[in-house]
Amino acid sequence: MKNNFDLGNAGEHIASEFLTNKGYSVLAKNWRSGHLELDIVASKSNTIVFAEVKTRSGTYFQQPFQAVNRTKQRLIIQAANAYINRYEIDLEARFDILSIVKKGDGYDVEHIEDAFYPEVKR
Image 1 (cartoon, rainbow, N blue to C red):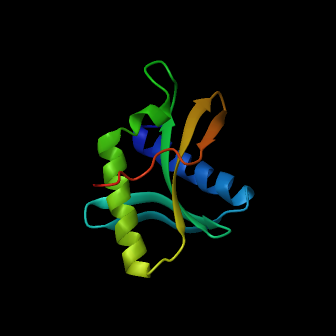
Image 2 (cartoon, one colour; image 1 turned 60 degrees about the vertical axis):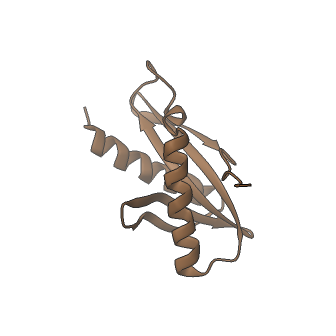
Image 3 (spheres, rainbow, N blue to C red; image 1 turned 135 degrees about the vertical axis):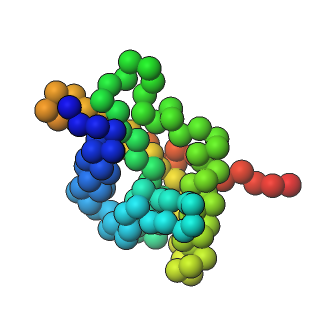
């Protein structure tokens, strides 16, 4: 049985291949800026996609995507802003989640496009 670190790395590899097979160009994996991290940064057409990958060995407690709570979303949005500013990106941005569950020798992948949106401050 793989430990959580190995399972997470396997999930990120599977997610990267999944996106590539769907026509995305993977620009970065595990991109960091200080304490902030983006699992996968990809692009397709005129959109930059910030993809959070959640991998689990089962769904007894919750689906993997349910672990991306408001706090995690805020951190991803902050990291995305840092990435956009650093590389002067001028594309439409989208936040996706890849929810991966180990099933026997394989994995089930659910790609949730537009999984969440940045909050607009008024």
